[in-house]
Amino acid sequence: MIADLGFAAFAERNRPRYTLYARDRLSSVARSTAVVEATLVSAHERWQWLMCQPCPAAEVWDELRRQVERRGERAASQDPVLAVLYQRLPNACADSVVLCRRLGFPLAEAAELMGVEPSAVEAALAAARRTFPQLIGAEAPLRHL
Image (cartoon, rainbow, N blue to C red; front, side):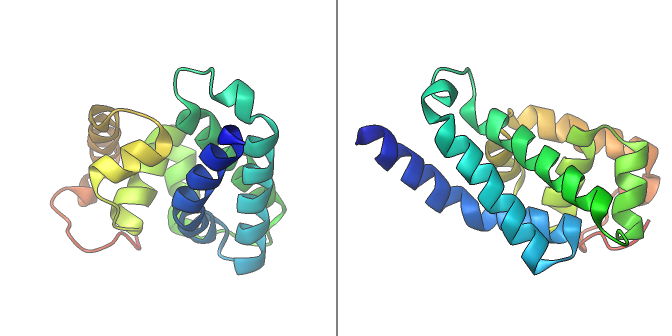
């Protein structure tokens, strides 16, 4: 019973944020909804195991990213900005850019969602800025590189 309440709270808190990320990556409401639901079903099935991990949020985030990548491979076209980000940056860096620069999440919230420390998101964004200098000082959401 308590485990179900814990999972319900986790899903309620993260479903909307996962959906924003998946929708941005997949450009499809139907695919993004399917990805988020598949991720949460997997998390629910593994909830007891997840609760024994050092960072359950990181485990679920990795599953979400895998689900998005699988669906994205089958998609007809991908946003060219995202294609460049994920081709030239490690996943954690690209995810940090998507969450903070494209979706406007505060650094701490992006870190919580990915199950990492805020300093890891800061470092990922710094690495992204080195690769894409046009990211430096830009306040508007990232839509082109």
